[in-house]
View 1 (tube, rainbow, N blue to C red):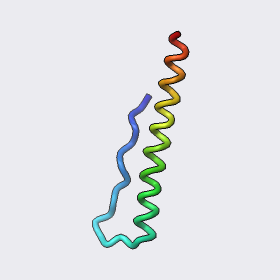
View 2: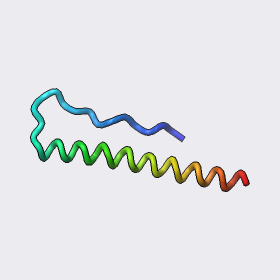
View 3: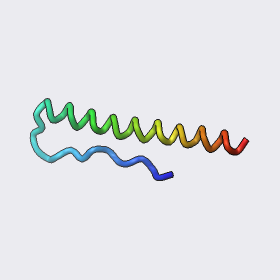
Length: 50
């Protein structure tokens, strides 16, 4: 039941395009995975409470 993690840390330097894409994809995957997991947990809990 933990909260979703924060965003990916972006380094304080020039970030090449390929690294930018990788960091962005990692951030979106982490957030999306967490949101889907939390949704599934909520649906399961609601079903069990019925």
